Image 1: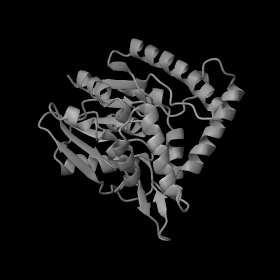
Image 2: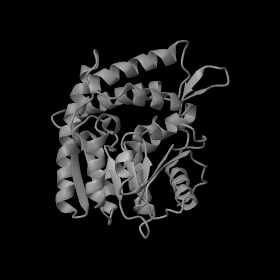
Image 3: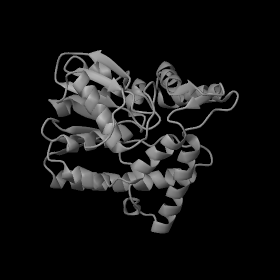
Length: 295
């Protein structure tokens, strides 16, 4: 592993059992684990971090080697070199790579709904050209939504959308508000900025696109927990094309995860009653899946 580490912001939730290091998704922060972590503490020492360029952590060139070096430095600083990496979304992809890079000390990995956009063959029932067109639109939307300064009133508009999400998914609004505010900082012009910013945000998207995740899963020779959200994110007007795309992907992902678990004894697949926002939406189910795996 090569890469220069950055000092990450860490929340030490405490606990005395086998250590866990919690990793959040792209554009998110360690605040996403606020409802899950207390459920893990009775049996584990629990740390959560803001990944580089996210939350309160410093920015730097966004590469997986650099991110893995950051995590290694946190584990060394806190004296938990054998912590189990537990990640959601992007954090899950990082957890698997960290375990592969440290096979002698890392007991395994947990990836909760961290599968990227997959490949066209995973979109059951859709033609390849249709999938490629849809994924192109998804990437354009993702690029437009990340790493940007907010217009006047933009932060209040985002907080209003978080209140709508709270009502739709039953997530306590305070959790959503805390997470959003942690992801925002004041830019040089005084306007609020969503982290990660600029080129670093684009680098995150490119890094995810570069991965063949199922190839990484098959390289794992330690226990691997793969969690999958059972429910789709609520539909929005004008996004029917996205709903169709994600429905097809969910079918292919379920099929491929089942095949992987059947061929690899060390792989455990669990379906979690929730959307991709499972950490905030159903923390008990997430914690139970992790605790069942670690037991």
